[in-house]
Image (cartoon, rainbow, N blue to C red; front, side, top):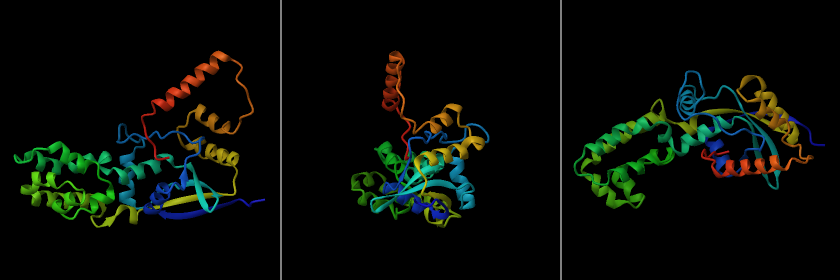
Length: 261
């Protein structure tokens, strides 16, 4: 019998992202869909922007992210038990920081918009808008950057304002780093709880217990978690069965919110 243990670890954001990208972190089916808004809409309502700002201020999480751990072949796989919204917020920020902090690009875009020599303004702005955290910090000078991405023809549009763009890019880099000098993924620590040797049913129960009193899970979500592994049943109401099948198909077809996990 495998012994049950609960380990407490500290990961840097870089380690979390590496495990996500290498498919070593998965979201079990009993986990709820992410719910956080991108930006604040109401006071004291969790959202991605406020959480990332908190991590910039404190460089450490308060509440741990909880994983179940199991060995699959030669790999160790972590199933996310608690912290789905936080994981998605961190991954989103690292992949597309300017979807969360679009205001950071306002000065850069104003320089481009104010230039009479720039024709393909939207195309140039979209390139900056889509950059990941790491890719933006790697920019040395605009001429080198556009050469690296094989868009030299676009650089011709902005070469007369290169110095202004270069200064503004440095200002944005300053905002993207902790105290203007430390990279987010290399300096922000995340508290991690790891449940090792637990069955799926036990992890379902853990998820329910963690979320029963301190989050806004609905009764249906908690019930879904409790019954996740219950498969020994048959739906005899044919009308309901067809409606349920159509609802499930529609859900997956129109799933607009892409999640990391």
